[in-house]
Length: 117
Image (cartoon, rainbow, N blue to C red; front, side, top):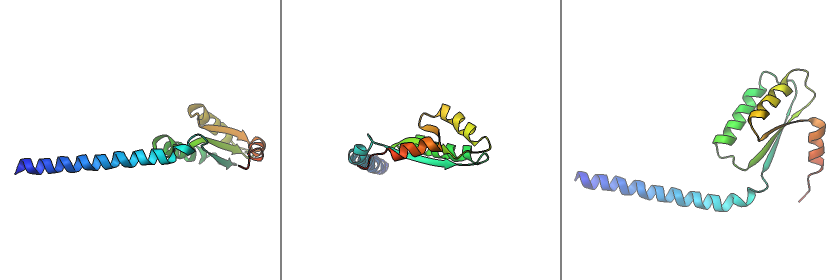
């Protein structure tokens, strides 16, 4: 009787694992076409010295360890802050490749040059 229960549990877990593998294959094959372009996030900041590091680290954590694999770049656009917000963001950009720090003028030029495809 114990052998029957163990085999039932084993086969239930095996079938569940098979369904999860099939689900992941379908997910990857469906959404890989978007992977080449990526999604860019622009964050405009001004005088957020106390909150910027926690905010950026939480977003980076979600990207690096979560399901946000299509995100290519996070652009932090500094709106002429009077505090050290820009320096904090630059320090974080040295640790993370997806994080870029630009001035608002440079960010506006990038947005204006985007094709309307």
